[in-house]
Length: 104
Image (cartoon, rainbow, N blue to C red; front, side, top):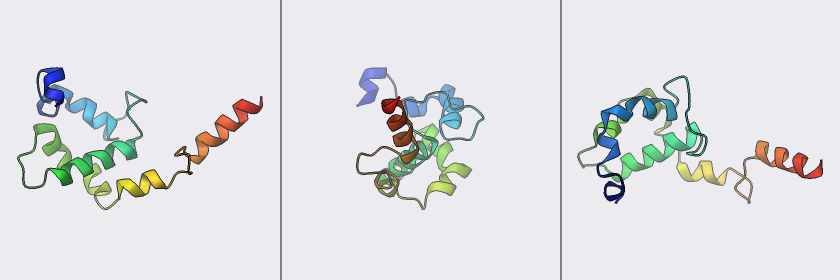
């Protein structure tokens, strides 16, 4: 479990609430590109909430479950998002950028 790596459950850390708001699109700035798109983050958190149904939620997941982002994404399917990309799993807009860079 990640608690052994970080020494605590990061989803219970109220100091990370602002970061959660940013990565889910509820705050103006998304701080990290490497964690996925806002859609991917919201769908991953929604999938986590599904897995935790009936269990006590960590503080940040509880906050998220009451947010407009969760309610906006809860009907979407994570698998659909991932399979909507080309067979190489690269979004079309990035495929064009890559192709153009390789031909320059």
